[in-house]
Length: 562
Image (cartoon, rainbow, N blue to C red; front, side, top):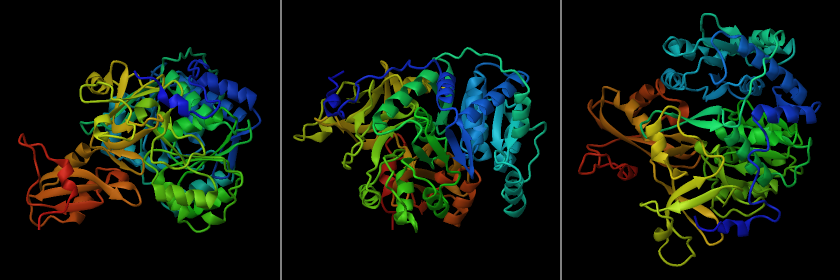
């Protein structure tokens, strides 16, 4: 490993190392925070705020309830399938306090996607918003799930608002499809049962699994990254020390529009809690007028987001009229922040976007630009206690690019080593072996290191497509499209998109000459979450292939044959 040349570019006072063992576990961290900031507000959502003391009590109750469930014990996996609601942190900390492992599930999953994740993780229980219970109903019998805890959007609100919200969601807006799951338990009932039960102490170590965080794979099926308590705690320290120079304990207001089931929001939320911050959970960030209205209610100081969200806000009426005087830190991740968006954001808010880089397998933070630095198109400098290396085809380390000569000779795969790197993929030694070598995580991203210690991504080794910060894998889309009887063969690539960064494009050779793009999309909607749906459907007479018959995806980005 070459010298950590990036340390020379570190902000003044930034440590080269962090203490990954400052806390014994995530519940240990919560316990200390809850004592220190007991009366301070912790989370706000839909008009209700819970304090750190309330969060501690409610998560204790949920943990005690989980311990009463037959067959449930330390290490068992519990899934959460919900958007950002107060129920999320309560369930999440409750699961961890019971010594169990959280499996975050995208609530927009189709039955096929949900079934795979529940089966693969071996989840014995699931906490699910009623709006999605009909999806679970279709597959629950073929999964290991034994216990279902259902919640409604308004469940954490006081009466009579709780009743009114739940009534409107179900009866007026009709957002809850009919469902029936035997022996399902209501979330509020679970909390009440737990409150009447003693919580049995559980010894949770740093090396115990905290999360099975699912990410895509080369086979098209998602894999569970095994993230330990230590992995997450290390990344909280790394990212926290990077962004917190101006933070005041108990005084920061954090806007969290990204979903907590996504690793970026999950870790950043936990990190901001260390300062006793108030975290405003945004349930539906796509409703930009409502988000602008919410922003107007707070003297907010911190925000995390992705390029598409920043771009959407900049074009939303009323955003430019907001008061940005208290804004300190804005972190962009998930996908590259585009230069025009970064520049417009700084003009509008007087604060720049700090671009960061990470991946699920690294909990996720790996690199970030220094706070306040102008946009330069890089992913920044490695976090403290993190080594990043550029490796060539033979895994030999490549030297930094000094600005002279052939940059290609300095370009290779970005590899990461540090306490935040996962243990491996759950029950998948073969996939683990593909990405782990000599203690290094091979990211699949290709880039170079410059003489100042900044890393730049130039391409992706894998064919992964990044849609609004979410990973989309061509193999999965191809397998779904190929199931249509009118398709002979197909290939999928990502193409540039002004709104989402990249969009999915599918190129098809038809078996049925009458097959239309609308028919393809209708078929895909039954099998794929919205962000995975093709935005471009193109027909060709043949697909470009290698001599051994592999589709040359890079040649699919061009125009079709005339």
